[in-house]
Length: 190
Image 1 (cartoon, rainbow, N blue to C red):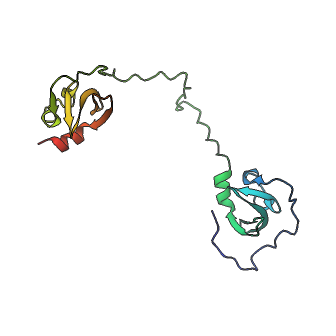
Image 2: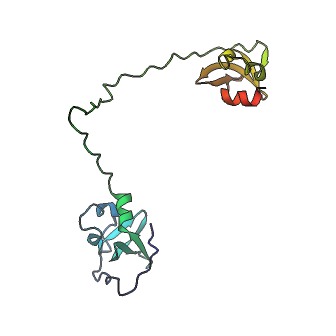
Image 3: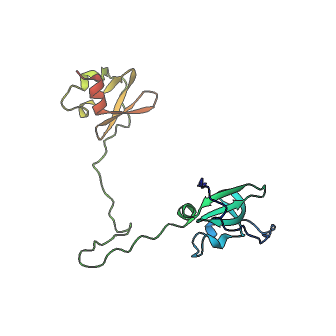
């Protein structure tokens, strides 16, 4: 945000001779960026630019020179300030005509129904533990692992749900982990 360009003294406009009202509150720079005469309209004003406060003492090549109460002067590019502090522009209106697609409000859009989820709420932890390496070679993997108690790299639990080729495995302590089926094939397959 800080302007690192140096300018020759001849190119600079003279600093503001007006003494600002030091009792006036600092105005956010967003109060000025949308005005048609920005950045010149901010000359002599006490401003707050993202927490940096001071008086706009000069405008040089579309950069604001802001002097803090401590006497430190920083430059801020006016285009950058407009980009950051101006409200977002409104989108262009949709074209009208026979090719226009009607836009539905959120109330008119029917909720999409995905496939019904199959979840095992009470897994059987008394069944034998099957190493995941035995299941990944099966042609119906990961579906064949559903409901099985598996050992995946030392983590033991029951596959309680399959979501888009990923296995959700719940341990007897109640913790759950998700495993990607394709990754399990690569790691534990032949």
